[in-house]
Image 1: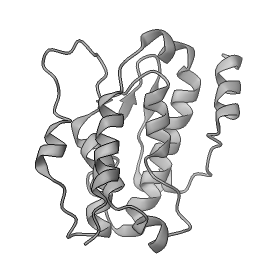
Image 2 (image 1 turned 30 degrees about the vertical axis):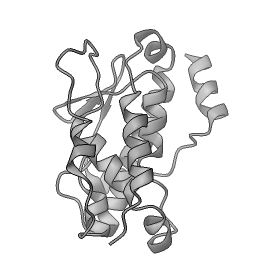
Image 3 (image 1 turned 180 degrees about the vertical axis):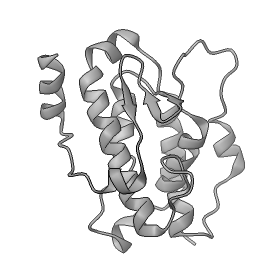
Image 4 (image 1 turned 45 degrees about the vertical axis):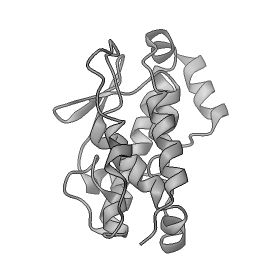
Length: 175
């Protein structure tokens, strides 16, 4: 069993800091859309590789890699929705838990599957560009733009999209 508790705790703090910023989300809607598409592509590749397609795109990739992975429930409980919050796009709790569980794996994913990219890097960057999203039937509602989810096979077959800061900023300046 691998459990990087420090990484899991740091990820919880990072996720708790995500707040909706409508002005930023609007200004960065194109880069947020690209990041959401890349999140779907990467998680689809991981799901297909480790046999974790049920529940995709918000499934337990970490549990598929290490079924014995255990996270302190109190740590995950910190991600529960805040009923007093007015945030219209909070981090979906199941996704937050999946990201924390992934962080707890430490280097294990890279060691076992070096050809695959971090599945959650794009969505974490998207969160930093204006906040989270809501799940709607067949799509991710990013606030000012929606992305079709499609199927694991469809998304896994796509070519990677550049998500470096310069490429993302250039996308936003075009719109």
